Length: 329
Image (cartoon, rainbow, N blue to C red; front, side, top):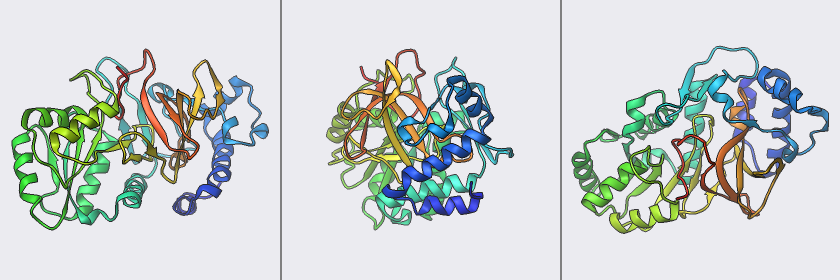
């Protein structure tokens, strides 16, 4: 397969036409160079020469990130991201070959959807992630804050009053105010203070982290829009095991990014992949994971439409309460 730098360039030029062919190229490379994945394919009796479509690719269960250091080839990681799962569960660990690539790639995906980062002042309310450390989300948002090049961009831990004061001041200035918050913390502010955040860009991510009862996304957004005086609430879909993110602008459907594609599998038959407008398990193809594993069988439940947009509906039974998603009640 291409060297790192040339493949990084290929990812910048991806489109709907080239995605499938490049994904199959990545599959063949990882089937050969990822020792864990090679063993997994052998256990399944998979002949890699028979794989002609993405839907035929065996996806690696995400739980392997808890028990194995997953990588394709031999290299030393620049960074190791750890999950923010509930205490008592094993953490997932994602070895990152090139930390700078992850940061620049995440910024590219964001700016493709929302414009240049230096148009924003970024206020981040991510207490549980900051407290735990080793979070890919915190790393990403910290980089966004740095690239925004605004003196008042920064993190807030539990100082809600200061956040409220700063939002009110910054709303009167020239920059767009972007508030990136873990779900339970945004709900705390909305219910306790009902501030007028009209005109702000509010991104929710994370879930309740065991602090509140989980609710479906539509209900969450209805509360936030009502209490914060917002016309729209944005969502981010990402996780420790992925280097790509997807964003939701309407409270329902996530728009897959250039390097990320979601396929829905039948829960009773995980090899039946590609369900349309039916609920099932979410499989993710993340081409930015070319140095680790790009084909991941997650523990999320969702559905896809004919345009490739997807919903996240909840978690499967007995799976960890994880960071970047919500649970069905």
